[in-house]
Amino acid sequence: EKADKKAEESEEEDEEGRLFVRNLPFSCTEEEVAFFFKKFGPLSEVHLCISKMEKRPTGLAFVLYAFPRDAHKAIAAADKTYFQGRILGVTPAKARKAVFVEDNSAGAGFKSQKAKKDKDGAQAGHNWNSLFMRADAVADAVAADAGMAKGELLDHESGASMAVRLALGETHVIDRTKKALRDAGVNVSALEVTCKPKERSKRAILVKNIPHSTEEDELQSLFSRFGDVDRLVLPETRTMALVEMAEPTEARKAFKALAYSPFKTQPLFLEWAPPDIFLDSAPRRVRGGPDSSEDESDTESAPAGAKGAKVEKKDAAAKSSKGEKGEKG
Image 1 (tube, rainbow, N blue to C red):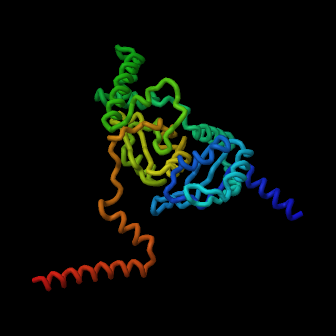
Image 2: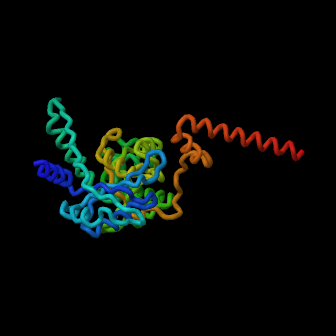
């Protein structure tokens, strides 16, 4: 009976086709882990665990297979085998428990179900045209560029046709947006392809359906809740933005949490960018001081006694240096 119970528990754990991988080299990447495990079957996701403080791999990963049977094959073939000089531990990952939030407000049943459906659909990450621009955002940009109120632009009683004005304005806004993206080191041609690319970036996210009043600092604050922002481009037209996170794991957290979430007056539309979206010349955002990052990370992770010892060593070194100067004099 105990053996049957263990078998049932193991089957429940491996029901999703999700594996827990231990003892990975700290220098390996998600791409290398994916390349190793995809020979057993098609993968849905690879998650390499990263230390929040040091931003370094922890030697752990989760591998999700499209078909659970392939996960069984991977366990049998990869457990206790060598990977880049280290012996792997490959076991079934525990099934993630679903969390249900009850909402008893009037009409909440339909609203919450629709919101969940929209958010789940947004997770696909490729539901919108890469250069999609919300009509209201285009109208805001055109009105701001013309120095007039949006109401005047949309006035159907004026001489020119509203549709013609918007069409001409949209062309102008798209051209300005493309120029701003190019100036920021973005490979705009990757956004203009007619067919959707099979591969997607693991760190860069296209952010669309944003209000025209959006500021760069607001997006920085929004995405930095999930990790370090490596690049952020917001054209002056405010019709879309491009955010690149420092780590793939942080990018996935941000995408999952923010896709179709309310931002100011409307939900955010997110899409994974093409893999070659940034040129090599594209500047990166500076994180912290030029010389402080290494010392700060060491002292923060060290216990109180170690911090004191580090300060004492610095003081001793300074006194020694002064003494040497005095002897030379």
